[in-house]
Structures are given as C-alpha cells and as structure tokens.
Length: 119
Image (cartoon, rainbow, N blue to C red):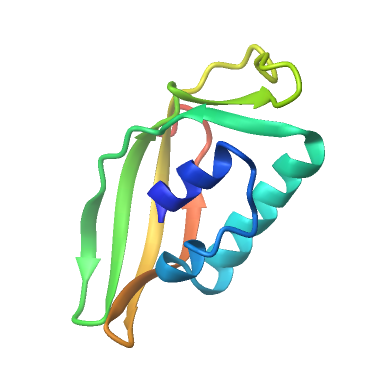
C-alpha cells in the first residue's frame, strides 16, 4: 500500500487504481482523500518514505503491522514551482496498520500515523 501511495503522491493522483489492490475501507478512504487534498492545494511529493514494517500481532486472516516510518526523504512540494511546501523537515513517525486477508489478498483496512518524532 505504501508503494502505491508513494507513487501516486508524485502526481497527487487520488484516482490511482492501484489503491484498491492493497487498501480497502477506511485506509482506502484516507489515502484517496489525502491525495485529493494535495491535488487541490497544488502539491506533490518527491522521494519516498523509508519503511521498517514489523508484524506485531497476527492471526490467519488479520494482522497488525507497526512501522517507524522515516519521511525525511519524502516531502511535499508546490507542483507549479518545484519548491518545498514549507521548511518543516520530515522525520520518524509511528505507523500502525490493520491488515486483513479477503479473497486471497492481504489489504490494509485502517491505519494511524503518529506525530513527528513518535518513534
């Protein structure tokens, strides 16, 4: 899901069909609404987050994945000018994702992103 989000953020494409392959429910809604907001503000992202996912709880059909995600190399830029949106650097954020197996495919159903410096 994060690879899909990263790729779509480079153009703020909230309609990317790849989202439905890896996200559903609240996670899908959050991804698309966040990118829609970026698009409306004329923003795009450059780079990519650095991920360190670890499954912390799992059953045969559900899992919780925690990650201390670094956004230092994944920042927002003004699409028209190519300039940084602001002077706020990226950093580490705790991300907790809820994942479910349905129809033979694991999809993120919900996720929460912590504040900058939360891990």
